[in-house]
Image 1: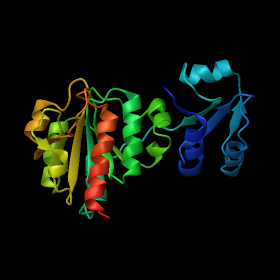
Image 2: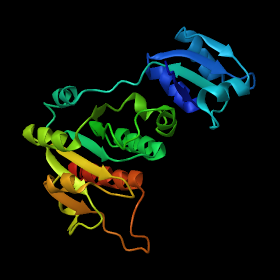
Image 3: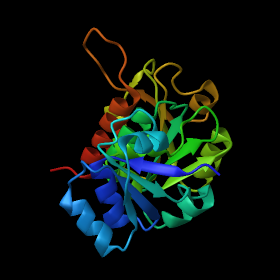
Image 4: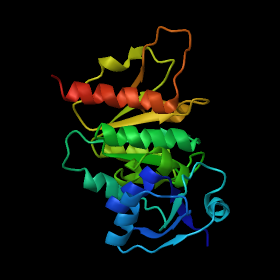
Length: 242
């Protein structure tokens, strides 16, 4: 059975403080962060000093900073659980990812979702990177807080969200309407697509609003995680004016 690992000082520290699924920790002899060793002892989590080669055998050629943790399988909420959890929140905000295959983009999106207080993330089971060690590292701990749901059919998911009172807002660089023109003071499902393909045509067809981020520079597209962060910041600002 394939084991799941997380790596890096900040990722491990966040897991030790907030994640009960951490099972075992491996560190190199050169790793000297007393804060983490103190947390390991406090939480009674076993750890072992191993070679750098052995740690690399767990996670590959990444910047693991000399420490790796074995964790239980990443947990996904069902769509029903996610909807139920937010049914009494009139401003629930779910981010729907369509074809985000880069774990760095996904990790950065989780970080923004946590930073701006969104309610959760929905990903497809196909053409989409799932929760893994690289996503955990890039999210700098946000993976511990953000509810994530994986579904088989995004189009059916959008219809279910509509039935539960969500307005569907899709990001599309070719849209006519400005993303600042929307009133976000309701339940919102924000669809963000990949840089290469964008949001699929069927998802766009089933959206209530299709909007774009206005740009005046020479580059006509944004990294998916940057675009998502701008949307989340705009929604937060509209909902929380000075």
